[in-house]
Length: 370
Image 1 (cartoon, helix red, strand yellow):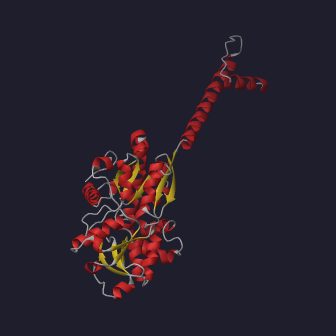
Image 2: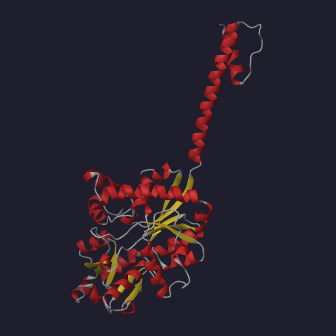
Image 3: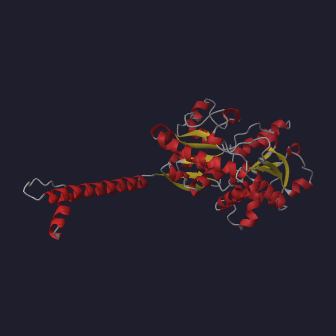
């Protein structure tokens, strides 16, 4: 066939033209039909590629608040292993130093999701209709190392050897109505005295509390095991007890978002919970249940080190990271009884409105409740 005829047929096919000239030889009509089908298939392929590219570009951008703690590892896993991307989410992790500011950032729209302890700030914002708890993360579980009670070396030498000795002593908290405040009160209550019998020192940020404990400016504190064991092991403080002995089934951290997301973008919330839950499963398998063996634990520890103890070489960070691996709630399950206990305490202390209910604080649509 002449080259000119081939050029004509291709151009006609791409333009979607049909050949109705019955005077043309049969082979011209056949070539035109074949080329047209080929071109249409190519165009369809290009359209499919275009749709795929569009889907990638359309991934919802979200910001997730985290603390530089092993207990926030599910977010690190979901980010590093593209679990957020798998659920069409383009996630940016935003680091905070305390729970209160994270709750405020959710309410203001500066971040979309947060994972941290229940605080007075969070509950007050929920009462105003700004935020909702949608799931659970870190929890105290018997048989798994949990949060420790620490005292300064100076306090230990002065006779503070058990939590019962904390009456009249100073205790570090980030702020009034923080989880540290709650833990201090539960220690005091079980030991037979009031939190008012302790001197609570609000130091705003975890690093500031660590510095104050090491220097003896405060007598006591409670924190997750990888920090507690690191301080104890380095001689910076002494471990004298476990929070699990004072608070049954403590729901240490929760997953929360804005009420607007719950109301207006439930699909976004579901996709976030799906990605985060996959991160939880991977973390628990590698660091708590160790079902993947030592190699999987080591790989996960290296991943977490990108976010935790980043100022230390891996060989010095690995031990504390592994020591701080407490179980995260599978599928973001929430211990509703623990949340209710915390809410009741905040109300009794006058730190939140007495009228707020668990239904105002928690949306039960996105995770299992127990």
